[in-house]
Length: 382
Length: 66
Image 1 (cartoon, one colour):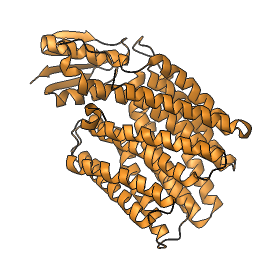
Image 2 (tube, chains in turn brown, red):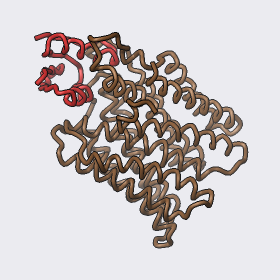
Image 3 (cartoon, chains in turn orange, brown):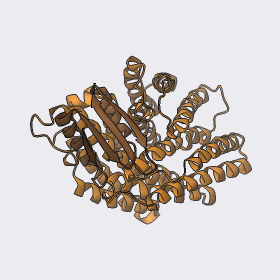
Image 4 (cartoon, chains in turn blue, purple):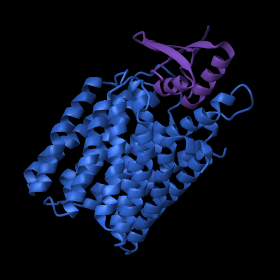
């Protein structure tokens, strides 16, 4: 691992996340050919790729947007080892190699360490950010979802897989992405957020709709699931409208649209389709993959086109600027490839949703993720 | 003090330009559409200080070496 990556805790999380993405998407393709890897695929993808990427991004973003510095750095280092060990042990547990209570406990300890770092860092907040309440709620839901999973496996709660799933996907991953988009989208689109008040209103909506939905899943009540799902869908539509109106608003700049924003736009459209599919359509595969591949993965790819080159340039080249020739941030990744990968990821996700083209979509997405990971590795080498 | 209006520049070109001007002049004032918090955070780690204000249309951020 190059020294720049090893020195930067956020980059370490993000690059390991990419390794999980490649492995889990490959297992996903094997699943399409009839091999049973579903729980390993989903946990490497969500507990591995998405969660590690979010943790790394939060370690970078939380101090940045609140004008402070990351606290408890030693604990943050510990969280890196515990969460990653936990992910690998969880995968082993699904193959019957390690008891779940051991792997789950290691993973939860890692999350506790992560939660402590984020929450203590926020006590020193100097600047206000609309993302903060979303991040706090997301961290609480992350802990709740994993602890619920462990208690369920230990037989201590009446375990419902939908509660575990939605605490972690609609909750931890979804709520973080709301907050991250409210911060990153306007910043990278170089425009002022259309409505901050509307952003806070979506937070209240999530705060009401998520418990309703989770209660409905726990008690097998379609009424509560539908009510909660409708609230979540409304929050998502308001988020998307706010961001898309921000983009449509008057620009102070003739600067070309950033590649990250180009990924965010189709991600939001997939997300709107996904929340509506969850409400109106019973196919869980389509709902889950619209949300987790269409919305989340495209958003992550877009965000990484900003985060990885930016951190790398500042760590590696900013001090050498003016002393020797150094590459610019835009030289660190391949823009033409990024544009191609954007098209491939939209096409791959769409094909994945159609039963007759599902395998082709899966293979196209795997190729996209492989090429994306390669380009992100090359950021360190260019 | 050097004043740089970075509006109109693509996002990835901004930090290198600002860093270059900071090294040349020690202090710069940048005019930008949105507050560049990531850059400010990273500059803080390199020993720079800054203050920023929004004038209702654009952000004006002054950065200097301590």
